[in-house]
Amino acid sequence: MLQGSDGCAMDTLTIKAEGITVSVDLSVGHLADMEIEAGGRRLKPLHRAPWVGDPRETLPANLPYGTVRLSGDFLCAPFSASDVEDAPLHGWSANSAWEVRDSQATADGWRAVLRLRRKIMGASVDKILTLRDGHPFLYQEHVFSGGAGAISVAHHPMTVMKAGGRLAFSPKRLAATLQDPLEPDPARGRFLFAYPARSTDLTRFPTVAGATTDLTAYRMEDRREDFITLIEEDHGGPGWTALAREAEDDLVLVLKNPAELPVTMLWFSNGGRDYAPWSGRHIGVLGIEDGRSAVGHAASLGDNWLKRESVPTAFTLAEGRAVSFRHVIGAVPRAGREPPASLAAEAGRMRLSAADGATRDIPFDGAFLRIGRTVAP
Image 1 (cartoon, rainbow, N blue to C red):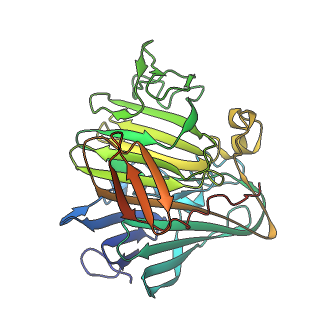
Image 2: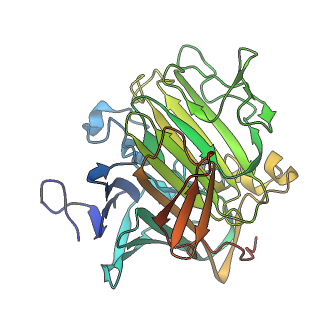
Image 3: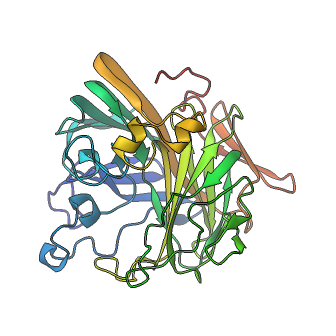
């Protein structure tokens, strides 16, 4: 159904199943809100920028509409610069309207189909959202139909913390920063990582000061704007990121099929930008951006460092062909201060295992991510 927080009609789609509610800002296709009921609590794993809802005239005139409405998660197509087809940052999929083609209850939850009103590289783009009763997850699929050329893609889920948190990942073979930091000018912002740098040890990544930092710890005292890419190891299971948020006392979970989305890009945004609209107030935010992309559309299509690591950075589009990829976002109450040491997706459940061997099971559609399927370029 279409509804606003005040009960009036607006450009928001809200879908519900037992224990979970998700809202989509249809003006840009961003997940505006996600609420999960668990253990007598309401978990809210997604972030919305503090300026969303401010009068437009108070924001920079050249700000992309997707940044004006920056919320939750959205499809980047392409990821970062749109320098092949004319479009704003992260493409029209993150900056323009989506229409509801179908939205209705199912036998075990809810299913909605949205279509981007614009085409990307000549392709139609559908967003399929599925909720299942009793599952603390949103299951997403994006489908590109037709078109020509190639497109880089990424999800862009953002969470936020008041007191930091601890991270865990499916096995990664490499972490690397770009040639240059996001905010090289100290008059505009600051950063922590060394650029360029790489490490196979996620607990010891080089810093600009010549020391190392632990990528598995989000520390609120590190006021910075940083971006790093993690390449998935060949391990045969789902790719996943787990964040145990300290103050929120929950566990945020983000999952992918590594064959479809082989990299996880982390955006640490913790008061590291001093100019509007960020103005030092975008604090405690972590973007967990699973993708098939280098940074920028042209870079993704040409020679790039990821291709030299045998990592694909785009999908090929063609008339009569459909390209799709899937992604999962959810949250559960935290069990202990640390995130899980391992995660396994099985029939009807997800098993989280702690370092001490303790396990817990969560309802999960283990077949959704299509692990093991062959993915064409």
